[in-house]
Image (tube, rainbow, N blue to C red; front, side, top):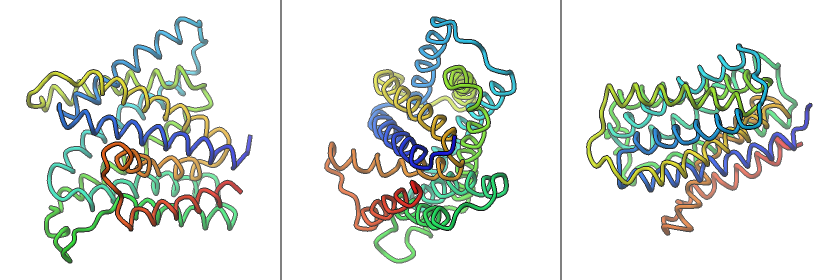
Length: 285
């Protein structure tokens, strides 16, 4: 079914819930190691999804759909760990912007080769959306050149790897979406749990190992709902449209930070959000 409006609308719902997940997870990460917050959310959501699938006797999809989902969940969790490592190495603005841009650009490029060129209005909307993501996520230093000098090249490399991993996850979830949503998401979450446990064993976080369950569960639940909205969005339209609209999720995090914590966005971020709304309007046509 091809419905650009539905794909864009579901993409916005996904972006909103992903943004809420990042906000809750960010608040939790101020009190406990971020990887513990993420791992607890993954474990909780995997158990809930498995209970639902078994409870309603949902038929298993084809193994290749489960494999796509599992691969996406596993490498996406590893990309998240790489992203956190990149942020810890230097100034966050440039690294986060590079990661956010590649998260959208990788599936957009894949879609151009796999699904062909989009309509002219859609192409303009995609270009505007990519520019909006950069404006929303990039917060340059006040003094010229200071941020670039404070960001080690290794951080940018890791940020690029993380963004590529996130973009690849969106592609794999799109490939898994015909197999249904609940079992596909269960497979992705189970593989994500395995990846997070592997990371925690290799790089045990420092104390405190407490106070992370509540925010982790809330963040994991919102992230899972956002994934389900994204899976549904990919079934109504092109991958590039669904992936780009969903990738606007940092705007949701910024708005929640403004409303709850009074951490107001910069003029550049506000302009990026306005540009994002214009891009979504074009992508809905």
